[in-house]
Length: 163
Image 1 (cartoon, rainbow, N blue to C red):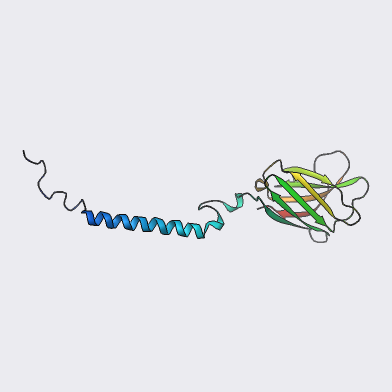
Image 2 (cartoon, rainbow, N blue to C red):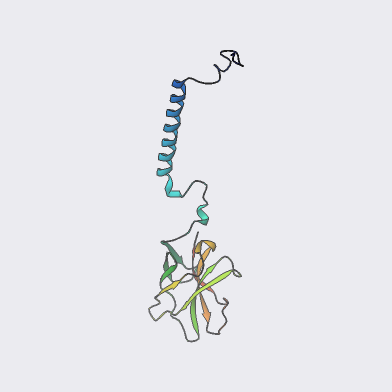
């Protein structure tokens, strides 16, 4: 019986066992280096992820007032609860309250809570989150009239970026 191919036809294409073993070692070392580098740079999230869309779980947001506004605060987002602590707000007057919002714009708002600030100008609020903070650009506090209207009509006194 004769071979279909002349001897040595594939000798330049198929490498010997030593070359295959060498290539396998190079591939294993390359994979190990890539994994090691990805472990040291994992703080920024997975490769290709958008940090702006990353959740803000357990993140502390710092609320500040606009020019001329008093008050400051912080909000800690922990899984599905937000814990707000504010100080230096004007005490709530009769017929008004403060409102906490997640906001993209003046028309794209998610109401979270209503609260009052005493004579000290301080308040602490914990409220479940009905939506993801990363879906919104800002956390805002506005001063609202007690008129039963669920939309924002008062001025924003404190805000913080959520992303």
